[in-house]
Amino acid sequence: MNELLVFMCDGAPVRGEIVSISSAWQAVLERRDDPPAVRQILGDFVAAATLLSASLKFDGTLIIQAQSKGPIQLLVVECTSHLSIRATVKLSVYPSEIPLNASLGELLDASNTGRLVITLDPADRSPGQAPYQGIVALQEHRGTVIKPVSSAAEAIALYMQNSEQLDTRIWLTSNDTHIGGLLLQRLPNSGGHAHLDPQSAAEGWSRIQTLGETITNEELLTLSPETILRRLFLEESVENGVRSFPPRPIHFACRCSRNKVADVLRMLGEDEVKSILAEQGVVETICDFCAKPYRFDAVDCLQVFKTDLLSDATRPPSSGH
Image 1 (spheres, rainbow, N blue to C red):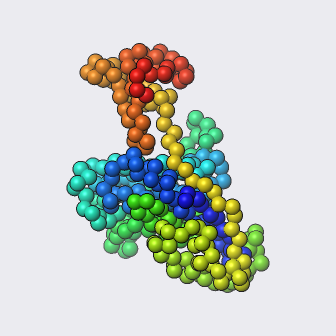
Image 2: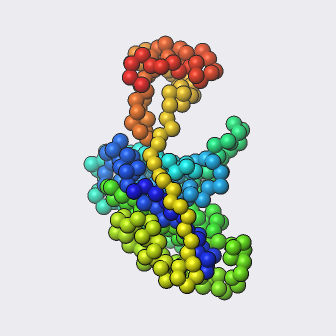
Image 3: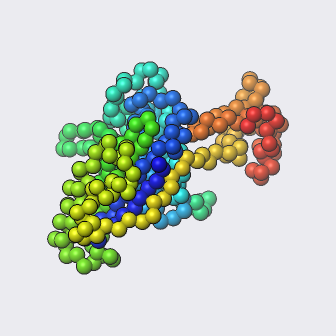
């Protein structure tokens, strides 16, 4: 099951989403060999990226980056507006050095250095236009006390709180085979909910949150979004109406290409690439997201720096990818 279900509550100013991912998540994992604690954090952020990207009002990509000076040096999850996902993690230690039950704070917030960056990158963005980017520290400051966040859900909630977006509650969970998530957002008291007075709207938001808090990790991992929606909001649906939309499919897809690798070589510079060729005979790299290998021999590299046309710069490889 790989689908995302969006629903609206007529009796409360609430929009919700439920996500369930199985084979697309396994496609990410089969290309990786991360320790269990890292795998769980990555899965939770994949669920978060999918939930957040479903509300994008443009054709593009939502990117979650978590970085620190801790054992997890960099974590990247990308989800497009068409719900194609890919994810990767870079560690600063050997996988065997990471404890089985290490927390997000221990892995991503060593010495209070953790940062969460969420980028919204429209597909039609012009070359000089910067994508929207929000950054938040992976710590809560309560007076003089600094408390590291304990989970991906808490990190996302902290980001949403600091980015001045709609009130949001999010529940995330994952294991080796499945990912599950639930998101609730309070909508402005206008539009389809203009009939609600402020007190009724506040009571409705509180009521839906209370129902959401009854969700369990097991339910998120084993039940379909449609079943979860019925179980959580059956009474609400009967009394006030809960409308769902057709489920949207989720799939794994990587956007790597020889053209993009050629761009990286250009950024390295011709002198650097020549030194790699002199030492190794070829320039080889592997995509961090899908593990696809790319090989550029001397002729390939010469073409990279002799033309500005990407299609001309990357002829089909003589061997490998």
